[in-house]
Image 1 (cartoon, rainbow, N blue to C red):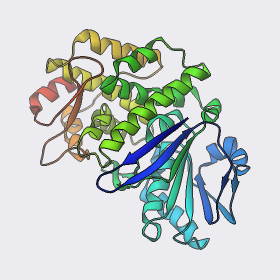
Image 2: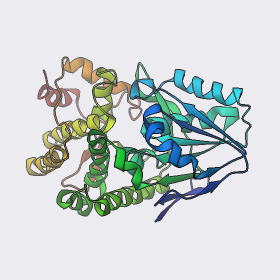
Image 3: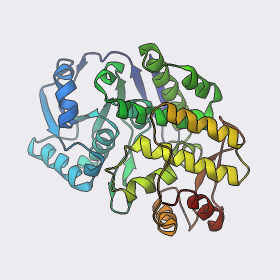
Length: 349
């Protein structure tokens, strides 16, 4: 299956998302595969049998969200310079969302931009992170605050990579699929509700539907000036949770799951969502082994962290919420602080 990305504004760009067994890939330039030890152990050997290039480098970086930093980007760039990579070189991101984001960012700045390819190995990366060209790293102020919009040349999604994925990582990916379903597609939400995602055909359907939704949004709004911001449902709260726990307590999808529950509570306070609809979403998250609660030590401190979110501007915090029912959405930027604190109070430690 091939899902096209066809961006027309601000400039025309196109590439293909391949959902199938990884094909043979032949390059006439230098290629570097960026990965981590965990992914390399399971998949590097088989991937190398699929790639032909006159020069092939393997760049391993530490495994974990806490290493998604400028320091790791410098490590990748150093390896490229030492190997004398030029502007016609290609980077391949073999790993999850962290590897994809960092490889894309390194590609965007190495000699002012070289090509890169996504080969996502986690469900989260396959349904969301590998599609759309968001790249970047974290710093002490927040998540993905340093980065660039930089589209890959292609995305190769091989569902077989998921066979070695830990259950917790798989669940984190399901959270991102649920996010898209709640925002855009009630039928997709119902599919996730009734499906056994342990079955291969259902996993492939989950990936395909998610990618098609993401591609449709990115085609309309590459740089998140409008509808693409809706994909950050659950992230406004989730990014704060990740930052407060130093990126080592929750996987990204787990934090987003909790963030969706928090966002839904805010939507209920604003009469945008019924308790019944919120409970359906929460039940689906729980069914997929995702956390739905978080103990906030200081609600004021939690609130102040919202201002470090990329979606906030001119002192206004952007909240992405369900609007009336599952499958619809609304972005609000003028919610009174008192109302938000009231919601956060429900999660106080």
